[in-house]
Length: 72
Image (cartoon, rainbow, N blue to C red; front, top):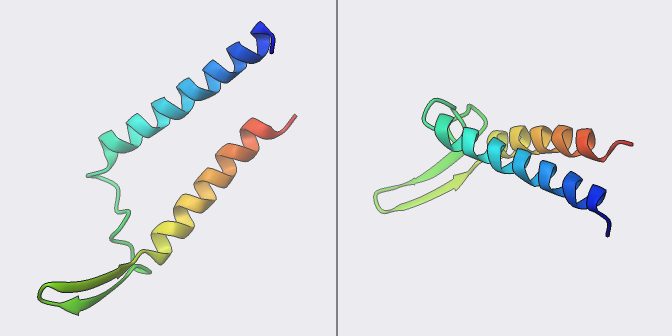
């Protein structure tokens, strides 16, 4: 491993950490987990939550980010 690869890794790791931090800061304003395609069942103390729409959105975003960094 040479220094160029180490530098590239540190830039990518820093970008990922920055992105995660921004998501945490904006998490109250983002409707993730409360989208129309997310299903909730149950009553009282027993609830089942299936975040279908949220999972699709996160998958699309992560796919775009990973494709951006892995294209050469």
